[in-house]
Length: 252
Image (cartoon, rainbow, N blue to C red):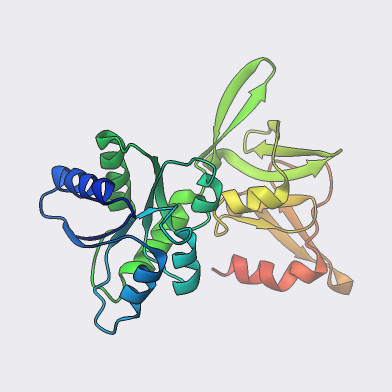
């Protein structure tokens, strides 16, 4: 396994390298680079050795580390190491594995590398990042949602969810056993949180799961009605502009 450290503080870079070797002596640190410009120059070389994983400080000596990812369009997984916590959301939108605050704790670093190894199963260099992208996307989908039932909190598995609906200005999660609970997410946000292979937004008010669909009826004038269980309060029709995408989704 090859690691690149992008860090502008020499002692911090050395300590990080020592922590990495404490975790696994066979990990090879291919370089330690202090700035954005020098990192861009490194990757511009024809014979640049690509790492499997990057440790990146956010505040470098000449710019923010995000610029490296933006300019190079890198799809190499990153563990951010920083003294600032205000960039966590921006980091999450990249190929980040974890976000570690300085001073780096060895156990947190170990957990981050373990997480990287669980997502990425290094194979040949040609398909390493394709595999990472697929595993990364799957790992970021939610497995469960926390809901409130009266005064009691309850965790619902995504496998139990039949569909999401938007009714009376409230987003609801409807389970296969006929129960429903309110959620503090919009349908747009939920679509980012669940696996698109399992859920599809058929119209403005319903996101349905594949197992909940019992039948699909084509009506004159192009109308398509989806029968789902448990029965919803309203008829569920596929929006005209979503019919083609819906058929493609069913065929996957």
